[in-house]
Amino acid sequence: MRLPTTSLYALVVLLAMPAAARAADARPACPLLSSEAASRAMGVRVAEGKASPYDTAVSTLCTYARADGKSSGTLLTTEVYWQFARMTYDNYCKEQGVQDVPGLGQGACLSSDHLNVLQGDKVLRLRIHQGGPVPRAQLIETAKAVLPRL
View 1 (cartoon, helix red, strand yellow):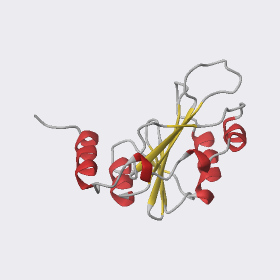
View 2 (view 1 turned 180 degrees about the vertical axis):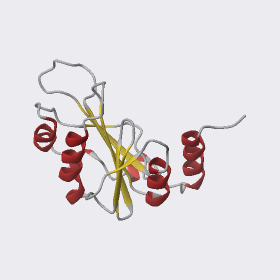
View 3 (view 1 turned 90 degrees about the vertical axis):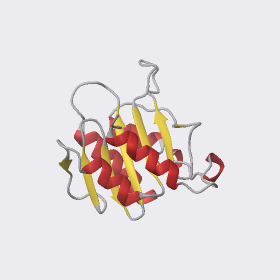
């Protein structure tokens, strides 16, 4: 049986993680993007982000919803990989159908549903949950708001 690339990658990351890589050691992703900055980038009022209960020292995740309650689901997800940046970036950005996005970080690529940005020893991964084509301009504006705070 052959594992999908993303499953194999996740297994490698878990095996390489130091024993101390726990949620208590995580650097939170939510303080990196305020609701005001998210609202400007998204063009709708966005509520404060909610941290994931599954954060580790390797990666942290923050989800944002619409502030007006018109949708009960997640509108925007920001995830930061605090370790294994080059390996993570290469894994996401070497897939078929991925487009380079010039001018962000040390490298950026847009997959079918995520923007991935390499910044030093970190990777920022953004996703807008709205169905349909990926809103490239909104993802780039969101990344520009987060990158200076990484």
